[in-house]
Image (cartoon, rainbow, N blue to C red):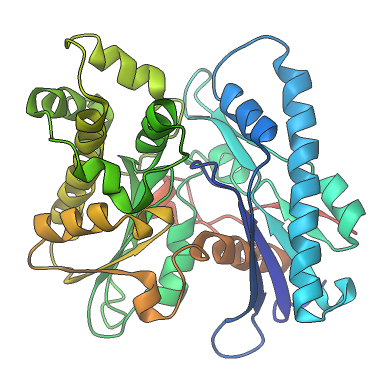
Amino acid sequence: MAPSSGTYIGLMSGTSLDGVDGVLVDFSGAKLALIQHWHASLAPDLRANLLLLNSPGSNELHLAALAGNALARLYAQVTQMLLQNSGLQPAQVVAIGAHGQTVRHQPGVHDATGYTLQLNNPALLAELTGIDVVADFRSRDVAAGGQGAPLVPAFHQAVFSQADQSVAVLNLGGIANLTVLPALDAPQEAVLGFDCGPANALMDAWCQQHTGKPYDDAGKWALTGQVIQPLMEALLCEPYLALPPPKSTGRDLFNPAWLGQRLQNFPPLAAADVQATLAEFTAQVCAADVLRHASTCRQLLVCGGGAHNTHLMQRLQALLPTVTVSSSASVGIDPQQVEAMAFAWLARQCISRSAGNLPKATGALGPRVLGAIYPR
């Protein structure tokens, strides 16, 4: 069995579809050490196909297989850049943790087990890189009765927990997920984690549709609009928001069609006003979950692309006046690197045959080793 210490690569392409983040991480010391980070954007045709595959359509199996191949090739390119920039050889990397691209997430439904589907071709990635690949992290948790998500709380616990105070971690990718970490000196309390609702998914789609830009840089466009309170109330009526944890969601629910159904009840609205409302919707949903489930936390660490949305961060701080809202960079981890680092960590957990899930967060029957290994 390969050692659990050593150097691992983590590759993450999240629901925001902004590209692939790759990290090279050394687990040999007492604390993990980031060696390299590389970001690669998705080609427009691949991004379009991945968005298309979030909804039922024709020729899905063919399109999904080709998208998985394309993503694996992009993963291999990111891996090559990480190795090139670090001066390491493939043999010096224990394994790659490659999450894949989630296109359907429906755990616990249909046949009581359901499924979660991440497009990938880990066999091709192993072939192209000459490195063992760990992939398919979520399905074992689903098989054990869990949601298969969120998986990052276990990593958050490993790197963000503090000895004397509880901490909340909010990941703002396409979907927002919250982790509540009790103080290390309170071991009787369990880590809590769940998906709050949309983060960037709706804002990015609306911005792309009306400005041609993939995202609202720093929330500047949203700042030009006014929050439409009746629309806000309609958005907040979504039943998912009232469900208790454990729970998870994705583009299956929060997508442009979901927004379009709610906009049908209104006369034509100014695009900037809708963007302002979507930003406030994300802020209010996340803040409400912090107040509901992390009431003792006085620190909220924000990671993911949404940490760069200045307007959204300011609204979170305004809604949580007794909490210090800051980027995960404030504790030494770039917000854009956290999820990729999590999948390097999950790959290490798999290689060492250690559990990667937290049943309290996913709802699984118990701890499980996550992932399937594709040898080089």
